[in-house]
Image (cartoon, rainbow, N blue to C red; front, side, top):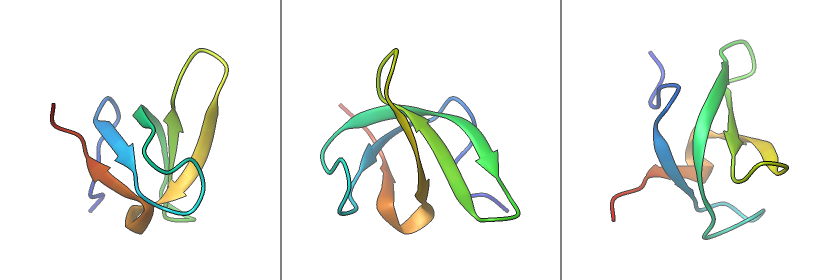
Length: 56
């Protein structure tokens, strides 16, 4: 079962893009990666360990 769902707002905690907040837009179950869109032109794949649910 995936730790995050499409539409979840997450904060990036890994080495790349640390501190940015984005939205999960795709889940690659085969690779165990989440595609997170940070803004209109920036998105990247992250593992579950590189993300945490964001709460304001």
